[in-house]
Length: 440
Image (tube, rainbow, N blue to C red; front, side):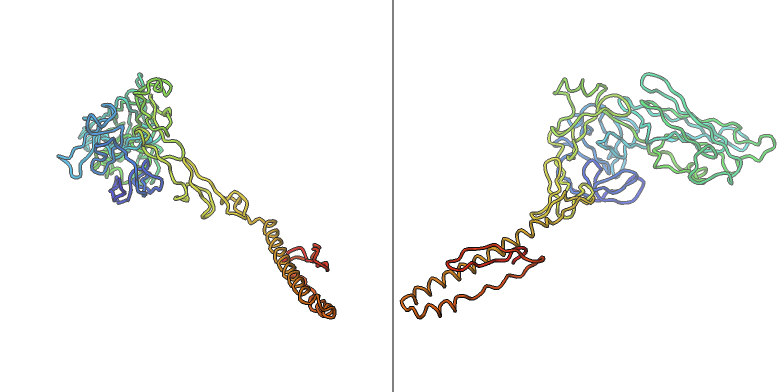
């Protein structure tokens, strides 16, 4: 699968696929997507891996031979929508993204309760969502109520027990409302409990938006109440919500999914049904709900539910994945190393433990080079002396002249650091002193 331009949920363009497919990320509607080419499969062989703008990784699939179980069946409706839209199983729950980190993003209906000026009901609805084998994410979502004469409730099932929670929102005038504030004046929020798999929302009014005790009715600027379970990062209260929400039917909500309802230990007892197929994967217990999830080990990426799904990440290709100095990173299987070149020492990292030139080695190399040059000169002089002696040995009178010519004093080699000490070399007749300490 290659990177291509996709439309982000909520508008806008971005390049890439969802975060589980790569390591270089770009924000897209609250989720991260990859801008890196992908060289591994996310779906089973010969299976559709996307529906419209939604990528569909295994264990999800659009046909029986492409999903793990019916809990992961996705209906791709390309008959009534262009581009096609994905729906969970055979329901009206519209999927907008699937993450292999165990989240499913969907659009859920909002509740509303509207009144005529005389306090009679104009419109009211109480939407609900039931998602067996999945749960409503209790940290990413908030139950939110908007209105100035409003009480809202959310109830349903968590595990095998019933639950109910809610909050109230009041205000006397538009001047009371504050952008971004959802603390009970025009807007209120409360958390969703863990392990919730059924949600139903309902609304009520304290005064049906009528005049009460001769006060000015809030109906003049707000005649409806709204309630919804929404992904917290996707909603920020604004006074305009009192009117604009009348044109909104759905808002994003995050669901958690997992494999089965047993533990990792139980699942590993039957390897044929164990879902973590990649040898570079691990089994994790989800934070919300039963079952287990699979994850690629650190240093790997991909789809842990496929046999060859988790592949090595080259951390050296992405500076955000390694802490090495430039050109000091070496990729290894499942990891990386920071290395220093020959003649340097250190850890090669950017945290003050970089590569430093080895000073002693530099001096030693210069010394060895200097000695080598000195030895070469000495050998040359010795050879000349022998040759001359052979030529002039028969004539005793030449001996004196030869000694004069060959007794040239060798100049000291230049010293790099301070005064030099000497090493004595034995020549054929004379002792020649070579300087030490930085000769070159």
